[in-house]
Length: 119
Image 1 (cartoon, rainbow, N blue to C red):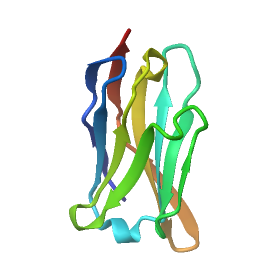
Image 2: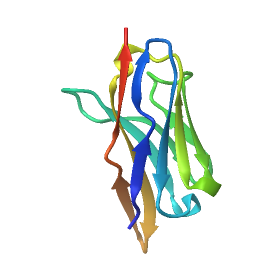
Image 3: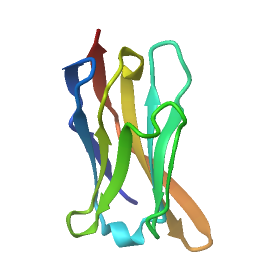
């Protein structure tokens, strides 16, 4: 099993930046894919960004050009750099890690970190 823990959320003014961290309990080389998701109050959880083991990234259209996902393999951490934040980015941000367990892919989630963007 993999433990996933997010950190770095907080309160920021519109136009500001935050960097979220997602730390896992095993080498990130063994993680097939990381994803950052967010869930605003009253809304469904949505994918924000993902990064594969090969470093291929994908982003939601609403954050492309503002957010950057990256892997720090020596520190078992994945980051989400969020720039030009907007009030609409306010949500709880979750990280997940997908890894192979035999033929299956297991996915573990963190507990989330709150991001609040003030207008």
